[in-house]
Image (cartoon, rainbow, N blue to C red; front, side):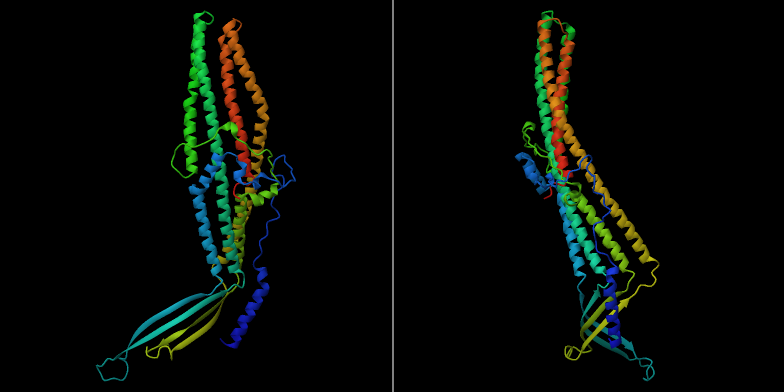
Length: 468
């Protein structure tokens, strides 16, 4: 290159470096994000949160923890999420390599045949010449990252990688919650089945008692029929409960990435949950919730895409160089055939049918959409925390009343049965009503306990626990 060309390129590089900061911007978390009052009716300033607890300390049931660990090892959705990380990591490596020059090796042999018919040879004589050229060369090309195009691409690839990692963490937290929720649901069905089978046994005995009372003319035949109907009312609950148990076991096996089969489990009454339910502050969701972090990384990808779109309005500077050997003979190929060249290229877009403007407009619109998705993920997270916390509070509120209701109904059943057997001051309808109410209250009590356990699980996931 001439001295004037060198000065021109140097001038362009210097001017570009001075003004490059105005082309692309550095990412900063938007200050317009709304994180206040995400938790309804909660205004805690304590940063302590159960989300910081490892999942195997939140759950005390060793059989549940074994299932969760198996799910983390075998769940197919989680495995796919890990493969997404592998793919994103490969793209990140590729974006880093863009900073380095490319290198190509070129080796070829060219045969060139040229006719000499038009030269001064005797009439009718046509002489052809055959030329063979041997060439071996190396060429390289390097685009100088003047305007931050390569840097923006690398930062976008990094954000994509981090987003895929956060997505994997979100899958993991949801997996842990799904296994735990289904596990406690299974225990609840077990308990309801136990209560129903015990009730059925009692009602079968009650039928025999009513038949004996009829023989003693204390009750009528209608009471016998009603007692038998009451027995069958309990019987029909059992097949549905068994079906629910089977389907819940199968659902857990799918989460574990294995074929349907029985699930080794404990019992509902021995389950222990954290005594203190700490939720921390809403702003902590930005770091604790994997899906919120994923939404921010996606926003960063869109932010860098806008940066990249801006760089297309500015010239690109490329340096290319080549060297090697070229000769007509192989004998002295490496001694008398060296060639080299160095070229600096400057490409300035002038008119391309509005492509650059379209690219920038699209990128800016997509960036706004990503920001809206980011904010939406925060709002949804706040909603889930609020719902789970309130569900837990309502389950706790029902505990005392439900226990008193069941105790009162148990006494009612005993009293009405005694009155029926030893006096005529009551009728069998009172006995039926008290028995039916007792079974319904007992089954509801199990549901209340399940609500409390699942509320803690859902709150733990909603706060961002389970991925650490």
